Image (tube, rainbow, N blue to C red):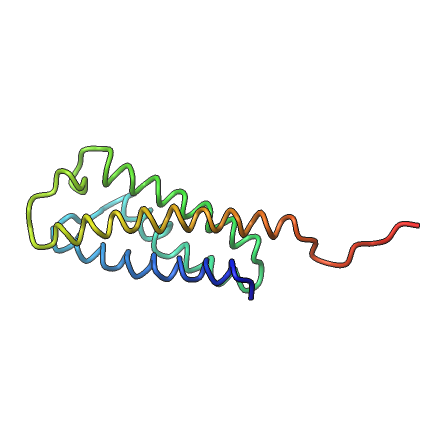
Length: 140
């Protein structure tokens, strides 16, 4: 197993755990996503990266590309909903509660993990794309 693969696995597992803690803070603060937000969170943020880990075992370039897309989309979604657009889960607009600190900390940590995971996934994909998969045929 390549070192970059191990990093990807680490980022995905850390991201999954922090997402679960962040979801707990969401529910404790009664900020419950619905509709398309819920579908995006479940499919792209929670389940998608775990599926990419399964693919990593059989097709590392595809898994790295998929993780880059998923982490990039997750980063943009979190940045917009937690920091840029006024709404119920904007960290600047959440009322004071015992869960507020955990909510803000995990939102920030998710952003870091998603940006870092995106970077490692792009590097892993680039490395895999530049590495020949088999012996090079000799001409002449």
